[in-house]
Length: 193
Image 1: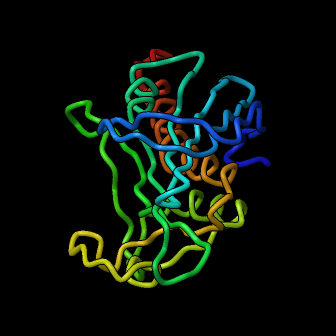
Image 2: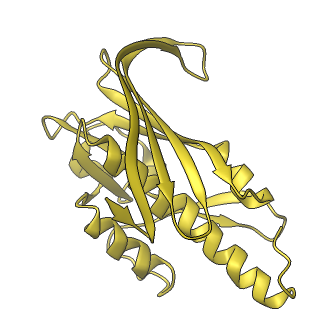
């Protein structure tokens, strides 16, 4: 599968593994390793699914060449939660990454029906549609109340669409950061953080 100029392929799948999450919880489920590359970058992603909660996490494990910006992305995790409204689906609130004026990695939550900045949001939404994921409002995929996420866009997909989860991570975190680094390199004589 290709997204945002990156070819995404499955390298390894372990059907049932035990793993510990960042919060110290013990989980059991499949662990998958995906590779993504374009002409300049190579990355590996780790996807871990939980058989009990029917959720999954995605994170970047390796990236070359690395930069300060991409190193910040490596410390982020996408969490996919089982939808209580759409059977067999998981969802993830969409958050487009950017580096703020103080050099911190932030995310911009997209609100359904809002006017989006033309670039890079339009490209990201187009790429997500190409990944064959569904875009839905938060309240359409869950009955959980979370005021900060009310009316925000989420991606929704089949529970076992692990490759698509990696594609979403690339679209919402890697592509915007690489795009801003490239713009930065144009204005700093080729120097990228």
